[in-house]
Amino acid sequence: MYNLKKYRNSLSMSSKEVADYLNMSTSAYSALESGVTKLDIERAAKLSKLYGIKIDELINPHNQILEIVENFYKAEITDIKNDLSEIKESLTQIKNKLEI
Image 1 (cartoon, one colour):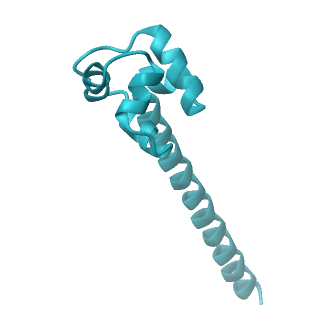
Image 2 (image 1 turned 180 degrees about the vertical axis):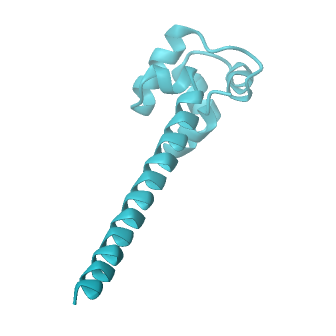
């Protein structure tokens, strides 16, 4: 739910290490990581500091989805601009041939 496992793995940390960092049991941390229990703001702040990310990235996984969608559409817009540029160039070449 919070992508905690992804962030933990990015630092090559075990769930026990993170649980110890948060002063909680490994089973309680596993419940957080699996989404069974909710992440409180104090632990979210500690994890954001540990992982070097914004709290928002932990508590709102939809931001990542929005970022993926935005990047997809930015790429699509770039492709469309490139296609339009090629079409414009082709039309210019055709116009020049017709004027000759």
